[in-house]
Amino acid sequence: MIDNGIAQAGSDFQKDVLTRAKQSRQISEADWKEANTRYEKCMREAGLDVEVIYEGSRVLVQSNTVDPKSGERSEADKKADLDCYKKTSAHINEVYFYLNSGGEAGNLSDHHKVILKCLKDKNLVPADTTLEQFEAKLKEGNGEFTGEGQDKQNEFAKCWEEATG
Image (cartoon, rainbow, N blue to C red; front, side, top):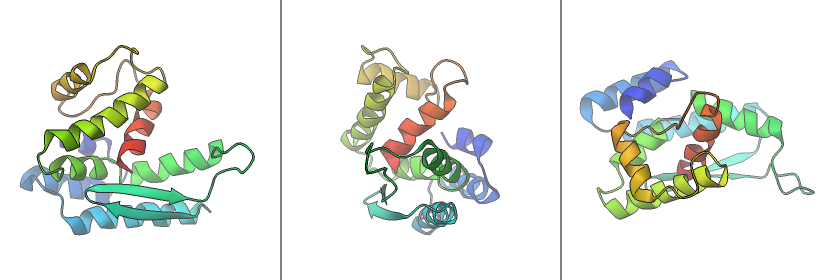
């Protein structure tokens, strides 16, 4: 999971944090919060009003950027969100959660359930994929599960983003 994050890091800050995490097997709370502060700043610079809320080892993002008519965010807002996430807190949030979930399988499995539901809802995995199958694939991929092909990479990333922050 950490190696994948280093390889896909969208900024030097991410790469540095994840490289330290690979050596120490932890991400400091200060680095985690700095990553999310950078995310929040990036979003505001993109003209989006967001607030980062910390709940245990999870990050929740509260946003007022929903179209009142559709109840959805615009494609431009979704793109800005994903771009900001990729270059600030992506991978850091996932690794921090993984390392700080208290080692309780329930916490991690709850997180995995949210991701799996999203993947199923977007038809990115077969509807009959079980949590056990999903977690086995995660284990095979050192914490990474992107499915088949790179063409759906952004959709997979969105499910992780929704589940972790």
